[in-house]
Length: 170
Image (cartoon, rainbow, N blue to C red; front, side):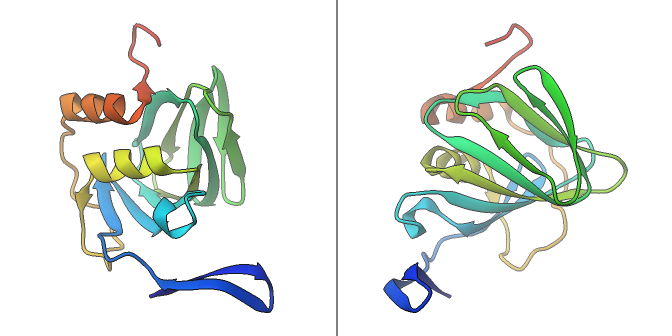
């Protein structure tokens, strides 16, 4: 697969082969497919497609130095952003301010499919690939659910600078 950087519609600045590493992962029972790692975007962002089963998502968390945004392709997703609840559906775009406590969950009876952009994305690349299990790149179905290793998830979050909010708060 080739990837190109463009400065204008008619001029390619740099062209290279995309990295030869797994691109599809089971992350907390969601299917994550990396369309671009930060190493492929001049360190500017990480671009991920995510298929989330009903009732699953991301626990409340916050992180400094990385913004996060979501574009909903299919389904309904409930968000919590700094204490405010939002319900997003197909075509909605949600931006998480840097440092805001946020969480999301697929709601309803069907999986949600969304695009996630993390900028610059290094933290999320390390976290998602660190806690996830690689899957075949052609997998399109949700992975078999398994109980997450909470201690490992918390340790990896701490290692990369992502804070998961527990019942006790920040």
